Every structure is written in C-alpha cells, then in structure tokens.
Image (cartoon, rainbow, N blue to C red; front, side, top):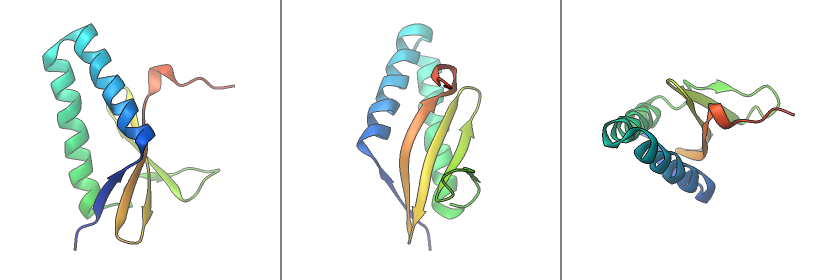
Length: 95
C-alpha cells in the first residue's frame, strides 16, 4: 500500500519560488526538468518513504537530495509523507 503525499504551505511556496526562479533565469526546459524531478522523487517516496537520510538533530525529519541544487525535507507519519520544505541548497545560510 502506497503512502500519500501532503505538502506544508511553506513547501508549496518554496517550490513555486524555485520553479519561477529557474524559469526566469534559465528558461522553460530547466524549470520543467525541476518539476519533473520533484514529481519523480515524490513517486518514489510514495512507495519507499524511508529512503531519505534522517537529520541528526531532528530524527523525525528526513532529507532527500534533488540533484544538483535542491533538497526535499519531509516526515513520515502513519501512511503519509509530509513534505515540510524544499530548499535550494545554494541559498542555505549556515550560522
């Protein structure tokens, strides 16, 4: 039985912003490839939700890299994969 995918509002907004940035900066083909990659990874998470690496400091949260520059952060609760955020790793600030 597959897991269902749910999105947080923050994840939806960051997905939208990343797609718009890619569309503006690199054109339709790059933005389209990004959305295809996201959809492909989500289909994988529907059947294998535990493939992402657990975060050391938040063990309920997992991360799955999207090559080359993005990361999906998610949690698995019961039969649901909750996409917490999608980040562009070029924009992550470490303090």
